[in-house]
Image 1 (spheres, rainbow, N blue to C red):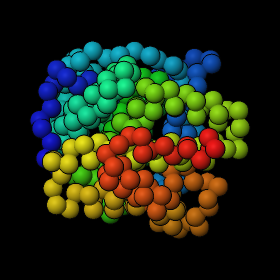
Image 2 (image 1 turned 90 degrees about the horizontal axis):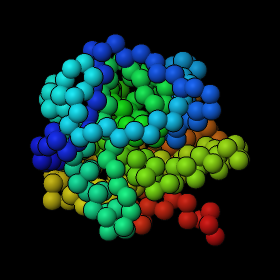
Image 3 (image 1 turned 30 degrees about the horizontal axis):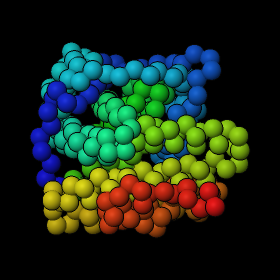
Length: 292
């Protein structure tokens, strides 16, 4: 996918690489950010990591990082984004996502604030607790951050069979979809519903993840002129490879629907394709049947 080079003054970047990482623990009353538990469970399943080691105390930190701020470790946003090719690619994707979603919010007369992109290596900290590379990329609503250890992209290619630049862009766009959910208030509504009815928590989480997949497709569709031959196939393959049933089978486990948190391979590819085909965020209502 041919993306424009990022403007360092228009994206928010934080760099924890080489800064020692560590845990930022929340105080009493902190709430679990959407997707954090689900990510921990998937990591435990696939990588054999104890979820309890991942889930630190959580705190609600609502702060907007100024654009082009100096990243941790003394690096500027520009320096952080150009450390290597994968970092630059991530920043280019973030810039494109900002440019795509801001006018969508403006057309709906809704307030838009861009997320920050946080690079870390092996271990870091977030407003939702500890960040560990085995968790994969994730979004933390507490600090509106998309957290990425770029080594995950190598894991995608070598262990999951999901390589390619568009596959990596899909991951970024999916996490950005969770930011959209946070801005619209959907994330808070789902979290409240999960607390009221814990038995439905996984089912609701699946719907959140599938909507984020669809939103990723919407972004790609609105940048169709940047898509190259084979890109869509890369994205759909990536969505298939990270479906709950496929991950469980690869881990030598029998797929159990009650344990699904992100959706099956078929569901993930279906909703990504829907976004790609329509380019319309209104087509991404994965909760519509619950309102009938």
